[in-house]
Image (cartoon, rainbow, N blue to C red):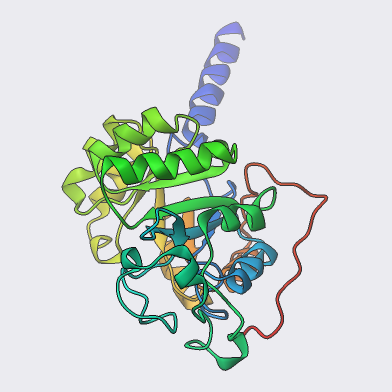
Length: 290
C-alpha cells in the first residue's frame, strides 16, 4: 500500500510538472499584453492627443510612441524623419524648433475633422497615459547623447517602471540597462541571429517579424532563452488574430487596439493590465474617430 502511494505521488508530481509552462513559455490562461501602435492609429491621426486618448480608452496595456529630437533639443513623438507625411510642415524634424513644429497641423492629412491636432512632446504622452497605460518607446534616432536624453526624460517623470524601451542593438540594450534599470526592454532584433545576444544582456521580450514565423525553431529559441514573444498585428480582426495566436504570443500590437482587445476577449483570452493602473481616473474617448 505504501509503495502504491509513493508511486501515485510520483505520478502526480510528474503530471504537475508537465502542466506548468517553462519560463518564457506561452500559457493560454496568462493575460496577453496589447500594444496600441502609435495610439489608436487606424481611427485617429497617429501619435496625436486624439490617438493617445483613444488608446487609453481601448483597454490596451501599452501605448507605443516614436521618439525624435527637435533642433532645439526637445523630444517629440513622430514616426517619420521628416514632417511631410503627417503634418502641414516639411523637411527633417531635427531642423525645426519645437515652437515651429507646434504650429503645424498634425491631423488634417488623416481627416479634416482633426485639424486641431498638434505634434505631442514625449512628456505630454506620459501625462496623458500616466496611471492608465504603460509606454513603449520606439527610439527613432541613435547615439549615446540621444539615449541619455530619453532616459533623463523618463527619470524626470519617475516613469521607469511603466516604460518599455524598444532596443535595436546589444550596445543600446546594455546602455539602457544602466540608464534605466527599472525599465523593461523589447528586443527589436534586425535578424534572427541576434536573438541569443539580446537575451544574454537581459532583454526579456523579443519581437519576431511575421516573415520569420515559417521557422518554428525561432519561437522555440525565444522560449528556451526565457523570453516572451511579441508579434505585430494590424487591425485586430478575428482572421488576423487567429493567425497570430497560432504562434502563441505573449504580446500583440495593433493600429486598432479596441478591436484587438474585443477579438481577444471573444476568443476567451484576458488582456494584461498596465503595470501601474490608476482605477480612479478615466480618460474620455475623443470624438470623431473613424
